[in-house]
Image (tube, rainbow, N blue to C red; front, side, top):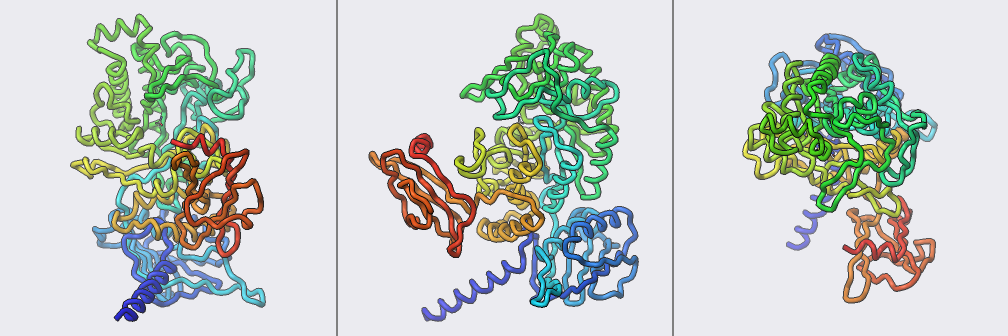
Length: 633
Ligand code: ACM
């Protein structure tokens, strides 16, 4: 009996290994049935479009470009369903209700593939899945000939759990060129993320041409050049200093990005962050603040003081004057141009981290509040947000804002982006408002993702495992339909370039995409990890460096009596961790980790590294004893 159980267990493990090998798709599809055979592709792939459609043809061009690394010769025909060993793509004449707009059905048979969807968005998503079925690279035979491409036969039915699957890129703290943004869109589209939240304005730069107010970019897009850690360590600019660092997008460039996104099933949500975070705007038009003082675009110098209870004080005014009618007229023109440019349904008006101190000190604001029965700064801000909501809805768009827009009373029709946790989202949904969940603890992509000895340390951490555990619908939400979805946010105070933006975004955005696309019950951390490893190879093959911190030992220190103890963790069963605590190197000559150990007193560092099959994998971590002591909670 025992032997039979053992054999069955082995058989089960074997089968589950096979099914893993077949399906490395991220986000994991709704259903994947292996058919056990192989589709073998040689040099050519004929693509047959059963429906003539401009969008489909453009999407197909993107698909071919993405697969160009495989050296396949594509031929495209229209309305010819007889060809074999090719890819047939069509739109359902009778919609399959289950698939919705973005779902698709893919059948891979020995004779070819058939991809069907109700709409072009579904075809696009199906094409992303097909791309993932192709190998990382073309293998060569011993004679140097290209081997055929082999794809497992299967039937996939797939559609998203949420309609809003977003990534936010902050282009104010660092400017990212049009080419950078396009590359960012390429990667997100591959993971079926479909909303690009473009954080276009902040204290550190105004990044979009507004024709009515040219100074917004002439002045607001440029700052004194500073590098190094953001905040306290960068010098305040001198008034005599030239502002040379920055950049902006012309409206023509914005249109180009919108078209590029649309070919990749991505809608752009532009953000104009008001009434706080407006120092770049005020550098151009200081008359829109209460003090009307000259100021410069912040180069990342210290402009605020933060306190332990998460409250803060602005040292320089970065807020618009909510009692000035001119401010609303100004915003009306700006949002008018934004609404004309961006075809999407939503415009983001920011609303976060708005300091009320300058309003409290200003006689005119105080008189305005008294006259209008506004009792405090929160209500004043709520008045401002309601005015902005009217402006945005008058342009035929829906307003979305960070969860501070709840404070003092939520504007009618506003959608809330819940970032300080899920509380704001729960509150907004209870009021019947739509919500996008971006709780910082789970989706802030600027947070540190590995050990501080090898990663940039910022004020908080977010591991891949925690990112994967993100659940967009909290238990207390009575009407889950109000949760439109969720989003990862990449703030770029400490992210100065595209390679690092990718490093910070992936693989955490893959975890996010699975929380937003896949059925909750299909999610599985161990299985996600093994699929992620395959995707690491895909990134490697494309020369994109992503964070592989998941391989590295996770260090935890604690006190046991008077002993400083250290625990190392790693989620892979086939990875061994080695360490030394006597300042010696190489690490292989140290100890294999089996259980927590003591860090002895002395001028000593812990060195730890992961190994697989005897080979070092990822980085050596090195932390001095005094730094380990600082990590004690
Ligand atoms: C935010 O992180 N200030 C929305």
